[in-house]
View 1 (cartoon, rainbow, N blue to C red):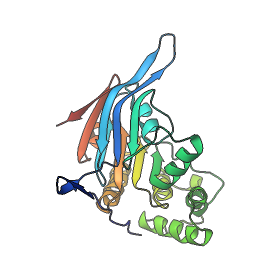
View 2: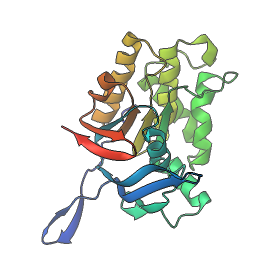
View 3: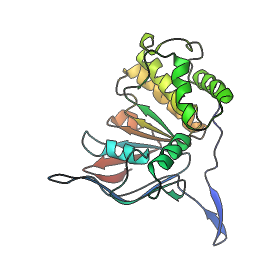
Length: 243
């Protein structure tokens, strides 16, 4: 399967030129958790990601990385500020609308894989597509194509416990991209993998990004972060670009 190359710019008649619309835009976002004492996990964050970018967000445990992931993935809401996704504010969306947008636009890959151990590899990739409106007849072909894309077309009937860690993460990647999202959020995707397998999975991410998929990778590993085209550091709830 080849992901469709996506347009990076939207034309607009403003000053006779092109207007670039970021896929992701956080505007003065703060996320607070009640205390006592109150904890501000994110503090006045401004952050954009363009269509087709590959960005890593790096920081130690407790720096606000998980909070960033939850906000970007529409799993949580800012306390203050706004999150625009594909140019549209998400602040007025109710929970059902947020779930629908998430299913259509965002894929997730996690450190712990989150595969169903008693369901086949094919079923693991198929099931999430039930929630984003893809017709049943189309879902299986998409799942098969995605598994072929990650090199697991020969493992369709296997159960996850019989796979290596790298293979399980490839199933998770196939599951994330089978619905053809516009953005992939990867949360410590190599945290449970050895050095060789880390390189293989990162190579797969790079191939997907080269095909036009926007990739935001959250990690504490400098070596993994350096493979992104752009790096952002988070510390004590503040974001800063890394040269």
